[in-house]
Every structure is written in C-alpha cells, then in structure tokens.
Image (cartoon, rainbow, N blue to C red; front, side, top):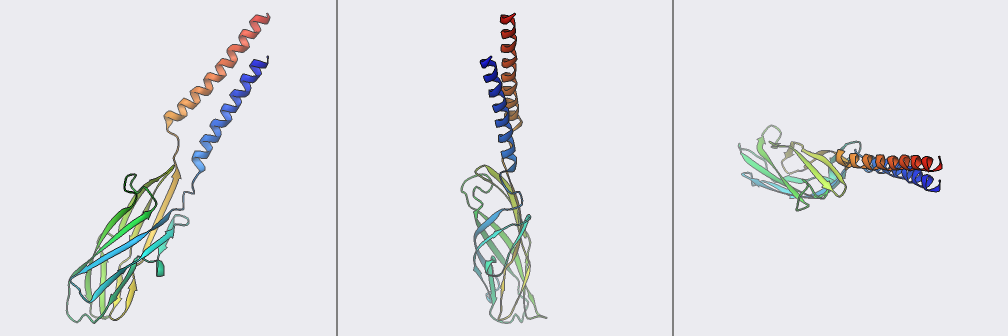
Length: 211
C-alpha cells in the first residue's frame, strides 16, 4: 500500500513541477521593457559648415515605447555660418548598440546600424534641414533565455546658423521568455501519463494478489 501511495505522490509532484516550469516560462520577463544603450558617430559630406558630435546613449522602453533626447540624445549638430547659396550634402549616422546583447541572435554581441540622410539649405530660416531616408531600424535579439525586438526611429531636424541641435530618436521594444516548444510539452505530458499508468498497474496487481 505504501508503494502505491509513494508512486501517487511522485505523480502529483511531477505534475506540479510541470505546471511550475510552464508557468515560469511564460512570465519571466516584462514584455514591455527593453533597455537600449550604445554610441553614435557620424560624418557630413558636402556641407563643411555643418559638424556632428556623437554621443553615448541609454534608454528603457516603458509600456513598449521610449525616447532618446536631451543629454541622452544620439548626438548633436552645429552649423557655424549662414547657408547663403544652395548646397547639397549627405549625412551618414552609425549607431552601435551594446545592449541588448546578442542582437540578431549571433556574434558579435554588438551591432552597428547605418542611417543615411540628406542635407539641404533652409534659406528662409537661415539654416539647414536634415532628412533621413531610412529613419526606422528594426532589430531582434536573443539574450540568454530572453528574446525580443526593438526599433529605433530617428527624427528629421532643422539646424539654425550659429546654433546646435540634438538628434533625437523614438524607440519601441518588447521581450519575452523562451516558451517551451510543442515537442518539449509533449514529452512532459507523455512522462506524466506514463507515471499515472504505472500507478494504475500496481493498484490492479495489488488487488489481484489480495483477492
């Protein structure tokens, strides 16, 4: 009788353990929060009066969205003199992410995105406009047991003569824990079923021996 009771207890424990594992795998990470950090560098071609200074940035998406601005922006532009004649130029921004680790699921753990923009004069306001042709970049990452994605969207901006302007960006992000594959769940269920079947067999054998 003790043997049957012991087997039944083991069956219950295995079942509870399975539920705990499945429940934990669904609830480990907050799905609306991703921490993003890195550095920027950039170069301007065709407009020598315009310079860019890169910056180290960090930010966390709250409720799935976030922003990089002010001292935590992607960097700053400075326009030294008036643009009196039509000028055509380009701006290339390199954004290197140090976090999350394992971006795109491979090595190296950091990843650099290249965003290209055009520079054109704004004679009416006495400065230049910077327009990005590929402002939104989407990334996926696998960091330990976590996986997820985030996007970075760079905003167009105006730089006035003799002034500086920060390059801002909006972010979105989500991450979740790795959910067990259907095969894993099937094996767990099969193991539990096997334990229950053994308990029933032992009960029948015990009844026959006692009869």
